[in-house]
Length: 421
Image (cartoon, rainbow, N blue to C red; front, side):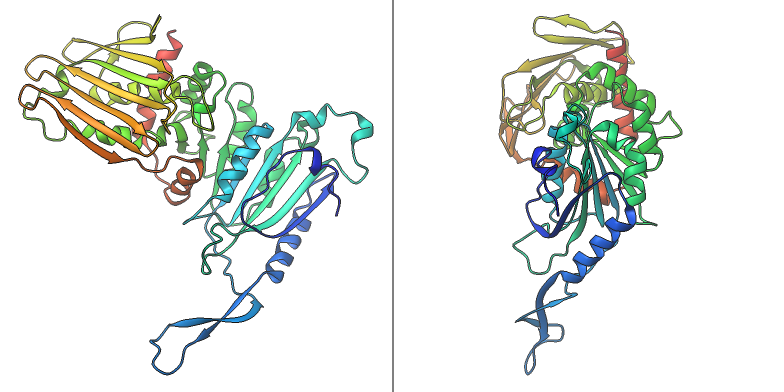
């Protein structure tokens, strides 16, 4: 087994590996990969379960000391195909795949394209191949004796050597199982490659918070979602998924309003977001535009003017069905505690239902809501936020295949805002 190429490429080591094999090659041989994985399953051993006797209840077992093969079941759920276009993206994907806890794929296939490998001097290329191939069995939770394993295949190489990731990844998928594509990069220049992979997939996952050029990326995404027949109907944006708690808490303010005109009387919204990603936390501009798009699409607001650039951030103006004007301000902030990229949302209302509603993140896992109205001067409650890491969000995607028309509406408004800038 040669490791010369891997030592100079991407660090995609998984946290809880089972049997591992790595080698270098000039091409990806699906038959060889499958044979290696089968061999690893045959070598995987665990404690022998033994049935209790005497007063034991039916089904009770005790773990014996002897380790035997064949203890872990091979479940059939989905294929997860990860397309990474940089070393950082591949490392992020590797950490997420290693952290699955309750639901995981049958096989995860990562195609890691490292441009640095194409720029390397010819004498630095090992004689035994220009692609690094890694197969392993991953144990998602090392603290449990009952958890199973899933298969992981990682192919690392330069873009010229790897070619189109579709022809590399799809032949490695387990037949007759759904394919979930995780596109970890941008949507600026690789639209053809994205469509090729998406056409072969049942669900597509991406993260608009990771777009290097957010206006172009969101505009391109909106032109694809629900419009391009080659792309699956189910497209999941992790930036949108991170907003679930925020949307729920904002909606709770208006679940049972004393005045049916409460939503119609909103006159301004301020969304504060983290300007740059820090320490693995996402930037929040994508989420801020999606939140604004969500409010506008649900309440029937229409953009009345192009987005205005102000010293405090973008300003969006909407016209309500009653021809009133609503201003939505998107303000970058230095807050680093937010796990969604959003730090605070403030909604001001006037008319017959004046007041202020606010949601903000005060710790990494805690949100606080505050409402101020003439009838109730201050009402505050604290809510535990759900997990928003890549692994937790991906687990939801692996279990839920539903299309999200609410997201599509929010994305359309966000793209319209960017196209008018």
